[in-house]
Length: 263
Image (cartoon, rainbow, N blue to C red; front, side, top):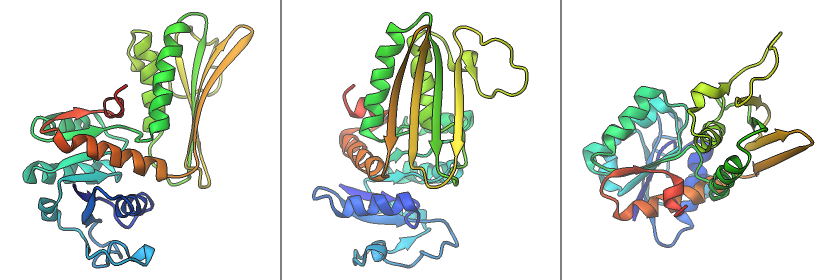
């Protein structure tokens, strides 16, 4: 399987490139980065001291040489890449977060023509955690207050994280409600007594935190905590490769990691 990597000069892009180069069943054929990037023109494996023969480019027509693009960039860049993927019949794995409603709609439209895995977190462990949250929320559906806590590095630009939102959506779905109808995004000043059935969110941004997420089910006399902590982006990279392999026989449609993992 021929793989393209977006954001090839970034931290996640480099992690993905290393993962592809270490895999025996897939091949790196395209490495993309933004116009003006200092990495343009360099070999994609230069940061590892390896020569791959793949030069980092900003030319999206290069996607014609790939079966699947893996993209963990930013919404505006991902949507531009998505259009090129449709044009060249290239599947895409989207790990980018922070899309607005229009962006999500564009992904749904593109999925009518190409196969897409779209998930806020590609980690196998995170997706196992989502399954646990679904089970817990169905059991703890009365008498428990739910809080979603997340922490990431100082450079993350969207909040709450896509993973935190997915965790909140998982709990809300288990309660048969829509997250926007029950979410409490901020607290400040005289907030009054907490309303039953709401889901609160707390966010930390600082340092080089890769990603911590905890969902609290707080009842009278007990508290259940379901936590996932990432210490390396390698887990996201391996999950993304698993998603790319999943798409190898998918002509069209949008899938999440729960589908990839058979959950």
